[in-house]
Image (tube, rainbow, N blue to C red):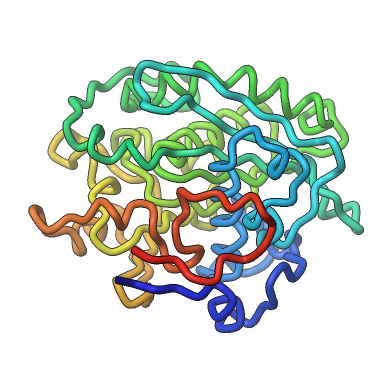
Length: 318
């Protein structure tokens, strides 16, 4: 049984519970801004946004009072939370995402947050799936192929997301173009597509951290992703211990991760893996995978659990 005290974690990271997070510290993907080394405070910010998506369309999310909402360290404008939910036969739970406009003191920090929910029931299904590739029909990404199921889910919510962002003033014709995008599990795969397409539409995509993402496309897609976003800083993929999901679809089918992995072991120690192709398999031993690691990460405990009370979880058991 692994027990994590989130209050102690906040102290270890040098932050108090619910301390304001400075979004201005995040560089753009083209490298404008501060240093891009892996930062656990930034990871906690993004993990909290991803965890909040598991609240669904509840008052706790809509009013931004859930535990993860408060732990994120950012405030959102009253009434700005927008949700998109779309049932797809691919998923055991409907696709769900939310977007919200930040409440900031400095105009240069203005922007919108977007988080995609994954699922605590998806891992077993993913491991038994056949992964069909489909062409990625974008002139900016020639010779790109992506996983058909993930991409079809993204296509089903893409227009609804851009409409939601426009509704709260985010977009080329809005008062801000800045977006902070994250997701967990299949939600991380959708977040990857979102970053690409939002960049194409003229959004300024800030550096992102995703959690327990499967591979979403081929080597050509990974190169095209970096080229489209003019990436001089990494998009970090946070993984935990023996979670098998970051290892599917398999390399043998031509799939590649887009960027750098940060792997947390069972003790909470992390390793930053610079190699895109080889590092993800370093921590994977077939037959010893553990599905519990898919939702439980040292940063926030059970990422797939929403606490609507707005009080910090004192203990998380695995």
